[in-house]
Image (cartoon, rainbow over all chains, first blue to last red; front, side):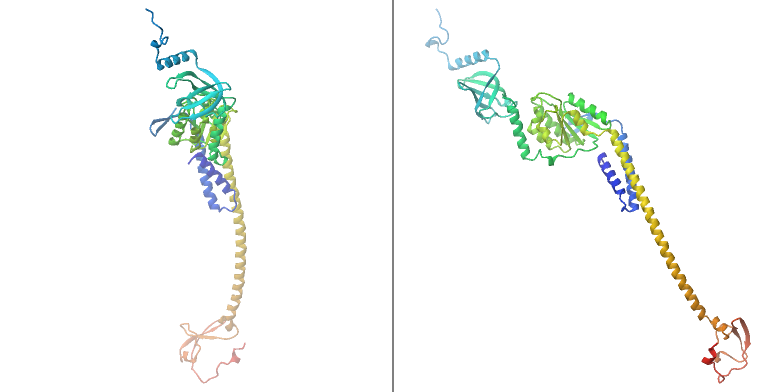
Length: 67
Length: 395
């Protein structure tokens, strides 16, 4: 799942949790999912510094990125 | 003996070929490559790719040719009557015995041909809807990998990299090198777009170059480059030259950035803001859940109170009924009858003895009274004696 989709899902969860008509049990499940997604997103942000690399096509359709 | 120079006498006549070849050599030697101005007339595009036309003014005209390989450098076919400047070499075309100007560059007055080419390409792309605002895609808010198609050693790449690094060091940048000026640039840019599509590892593309002359930027006005960019599977940002440079590629990109630095700013959010957004989401979630739990607790309490009220009501109703039943049971109890002065005879094995047939002379039995028991023995049994009547049961 991409960072973008993770964040979109987090926004959905936050919006759903804001509603009063959500059954409590479902709210807890959503919250649990949200926490997992938050960890995922934070971990992605904490990853090693992004690189500047060059795309090289070594053979037809065989790609390599290296810096 | 003196010999006449070639062509001096009829005996020394020279061939047509020799004369025209000599004329060709003389003319080419006398005139360097130069610019000539005039009005375009009778332009025809031959199917072999060469263009033929005349340059003329009020007094004279000059036969011109543009070889196919040179037409590629000319942005558009000039209109009939257009005032142009043509650069070329004056020569002679021996096969027709004509003086001919071999053009390798053509410019029109003012914006001229560039504008014409731009307008024509723009009109074609517009007609196909490729420049429509409805086609513009939203950029990813948090791209992870940004592809940059540009010259690997140009200023544009330096700017893009430094701005992205400063804003968000977590984002990866993958450079797809391409020539961004010169005759090879369109094909090189198209090949880079093709590699990007087949690789598929980026979620946003920045394509562009730094500032330069109009000729330098021309590859970004190339129709095929624009079409290749329009076909790109991921959102695109164009960043060509400076703020005032507007290209065809800008029209089809999802976002046109004034410069490469602006493109980089539009492409990535500041990392601190992303972290803040995450914290905001975490707060919103736990706040939402807390509210939900409090709401749930209130609901539970409300329902609990309702429940106990109902239970209390049921219990009270039951208690009243039990009391009522108890009263009735007491009234029906044989003990109550005994209390009124009656006795019951019971056999020793516990059966009530309600008929004379149950008594046998000499057999013992019990008499039950309301305050105890009397053991008795049957003296004799009489079926003809006085019976118990309704009157006797009255207390």
